[in-house]
Amino acid sequence: MFKIETLKNNTMLFHTKEYTAFLSYGVPQVIVWKDSSEFSGTVMHNMHKYSNTTSKHKKAFMRTLCTASYTFIPTSPAENQEVTDIETMATI
Picture 1 (tube, rainbow, N blue to C red):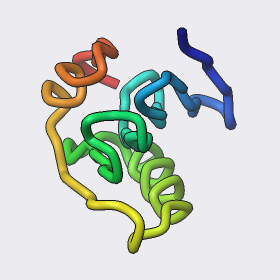
Picture 2: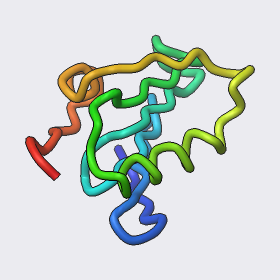
Picture 3: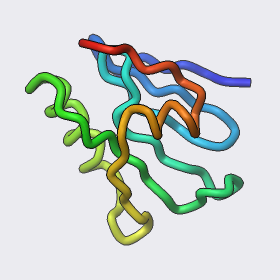
Picture 4: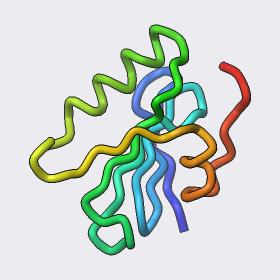
């Protein structure tokens, strides 16, 4: 079961039982793992450089997270897709 929440133009949150994924232009940029998951307390953030707008979206969302509460791990789009099953578009 999942829920999609639109934030602003071209950004959304994809909520599941295990994680919340922040997407910009349909690409997962930040994945916040919930306490009930095997990656509890972990934030995976996409290290691939996209447009300036996508970078701004990602940085703004990451500023809302408490750095003391999470371990931040830079990941590739392929790694994000592997652990979330959210298909990553090839280009933006």
